Length: 131
Image (cartoon, rainbow, N blue to C red):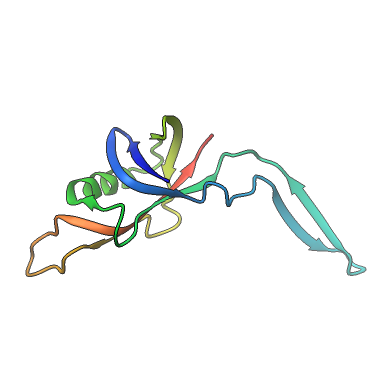
């Protein structure tokens, strides 16, 4: 599903929310007893910390240079929390700076000399849901 997404007041059209249903809220750690049997520890911390990536492709989810620069400026602020509005739902998110590169984008046209491209595709913005 693509929709208008707003992050920190910046509108990003036509990116798709990935990882929405691929994250389990259950954490597990498996250890081994002295006898060799598995010991499994599980807990359920909730939805906080759930990754939610915004992605585009070659043909959809293009962003402008201004949108890319705005996202990169927001990602450069340590510990910043933003409101993301997606399909009418507001979520608190942060950029997953621990998973670099936090923003990926390819210029639609090859860069010639020092000209900055106007449009980018194959976008991936790595976010983490905080609620």
